[in-house]
Image 1 (spheres, one colour):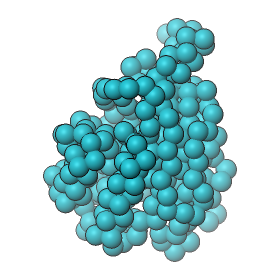
Image 2: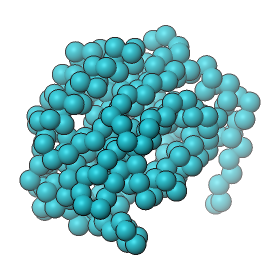
Image 3: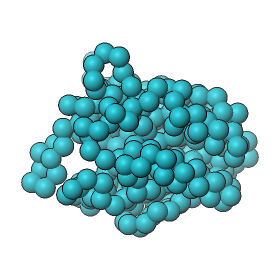
Image 4: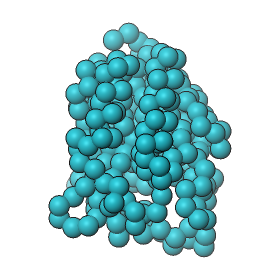
Length: 271
């Protein structure tokens, strides 16, 4: 695979019409591919974003319609696709998993991550208890690709720096973060957290966020970002627009950052 190559983050305003959401995702994937993107990241819950209590009724299996159509899109456009996340049906109880899949250009599923950290917050104007409807997943596993290693996280995971640190970061080039980050928290923390994760882990971060209101009183922040390992913002979307942003990912630049500031070698852990 040539270096540099192009990554894309898709920003959507998904609602409760699943078919419409899937068609929007397919259209924006095609747009990103036309711009030369080799890796495309969709937002969290891109196929259905509404009330948490409705997630169980919208849940699908790992080979359901959403996964099938995203697999076909990856194959059609010859891309690596981080298919945002969707509600995955579970047998244990009525809760679902918030699951992100990765497909390669042949349509093979090469990555699966279920959101670990669940958004249970009680702010003055944002009250959410995700854990009531969603079950926590397990640590992700880095994915090896010709584009470089890929790590996965979802939305609220961004606040937990130990998650990417659980991986062998020397084998990771990019962190993909599908999100539905709220405007309340996003205005204060979105960019600074994304840049921090890029800097401290010396990786490119590709963060695809939702925008617009999805339930009464809760607005998504937008501002999807692509950040390089030095913390430089390479591309940023607006706060209220459906769009695709792209940026060059240079593995040579990644190697230079790690060579000039070898923090992985300098790291000391308490015993």
